[in-house]
Image 1 (cartoon, rainbow, N blue to C red):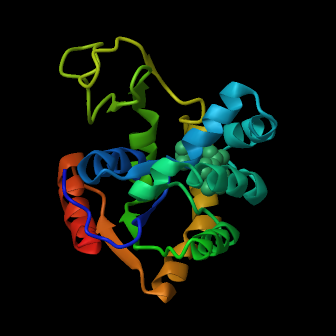
Image 2 (image 1 turned 135 degrees about the horizontal axis):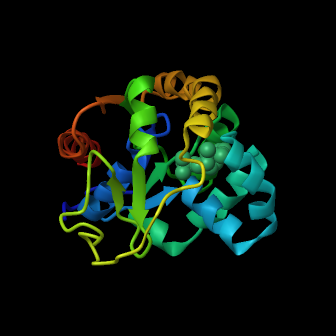
Length: 227
Ligand code: AMP
């Protein structure tokens, strides 16, 4: 694992449309740099599965591919960031997705004298996203990500990472919902590229190639940010 040489915990943001590879790359960064991946999508799916009030409110919105309210998402993120493991530094995957969320994050970090280390935009083309999303699935045991075409387990039906034999697909990974999710991205999240550019923390990365090549570029960039 690379040593993190920073005075306050790193705060990395991964920006990009659904299917850009934020989750896959965040997990790899977690392993490599000892950071904690915070995915608001995962936190919301947990809330839905647990049947909490937030989960009940979010369920139909997520199934339609729309954005869950800022109020719910900010509350979930704030609670998660208060946990001690976040002192190791965090990778935000799927948050912020609106300008309101970005401003709430700035406020939250200011209260603990932290700031954004980098907002990294994973640059991809929409046409590729539908193919990527519609083939993806994860190990039900450990969450390792796979894809029908781009990344299959070495032994069919067996997770490379933990040996698990059960896999699952997300309810919102279907063609209609993906179209809504891309629309939501362009309307509400893409403006954050300018927002972070103005803060001087934006970095871009070409995320159209192979997972390992993108990981290599991204990890080089993160190493530079954290040194
Ligand atoms: P993801 O796993 O990041 O693709 O998120 C799945 C779904 O959860 C999204 O399509 C939204 O409905 C919801 N969601 C996740 N993160 C956010 C967020 N920061 N703001 C609003 N909705 C979110």
